[in-house]
Image 1: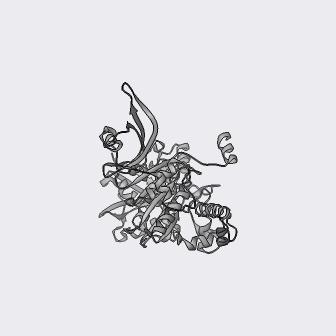
Image 2: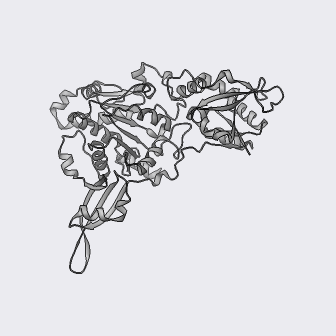
Image 3: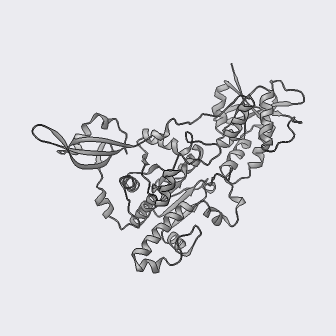
Length: 463
């Protein structure tokens, strides 16, 4: 039997392509009430992804094809059929208009309560990615589901490091003969325990070798030589950070996905790699992007904050400024010349003199995702931070902005979700991590080690 869904605003604002996905060539009927249309209308002028999808919804409605619906309306309600143009198909949408709602007042969520009223009266399955609305619906015995599209099971199990034990004679040839090696994708990370033998036994020498699989062969990574090649502001401190730096600066790597908790050094190492590529002339600048979503700003609207666009963005760019300030402070401690060059106070989230000088000197640009649409980012090293708070549509938007000579790294922690419609199982970062496990074009790494202060470590262990 055909399933009938009432979709709330979150389904459309998550990705307008969801309408095509839900239609399933006519297997499902899609209902939208006038409350949702009103919410979309209020958001269509937003200068972000939310506004874009709201505008895309209205742009693709074929208004000339509207007609009275075949579905029976209740009491004073009216139901009209509109058609949404998607992927060369006309998706019928049943629009329910109710002039007088029974729900008049609500301390919280009047629109949500009215959407639930429609779902209950018409016995429709409420489809929402707003978890609080879903729980509220279920508590009132209203059928409710989330859209499970793009859900990734067990994202915490995704890893890219493989271990081998091979004889010290012909390390490369021996590891390439391993059956498990042949099953790895390109850009897989490899750690090798070196073996030797006596006349009667085989034993580990204690020496380790590291590398990646590339073009179906083992490519050894000499971290000591790699780290001596360039004068670092901040050197990678552990094996994971060294692997990340090697991936980001590898001549053949264009896209890197990096997952790791706060304190694992993601942003710091990405910035250092970008500075290295800038000095070598591989790129002409660094672009830092971060989704402007916080736990308090449900719709990620910069407009409600004080200041001009640059000042508003600064609220969200603390990870970048923190990494820069860390570098500046380290340089000031180590060099009198650097103390003179990077004058001013560094340890602040505001644009102090030293930080501004560093950004200008190294051609670092902070970009709002909302302004990325329609631009082409050429010969830049792009750092997309907090990718777990980006939908797949946002990931696609940024990825399609990359010119042939640019590189991009996506950073994030799937356990730190602030986006109202995403979860640790369903967000842009885990989608990329899954693809990086399968696709030879993407390099991926998960950072498990965190470097915390004594105070931070105490709270981590005791709370």
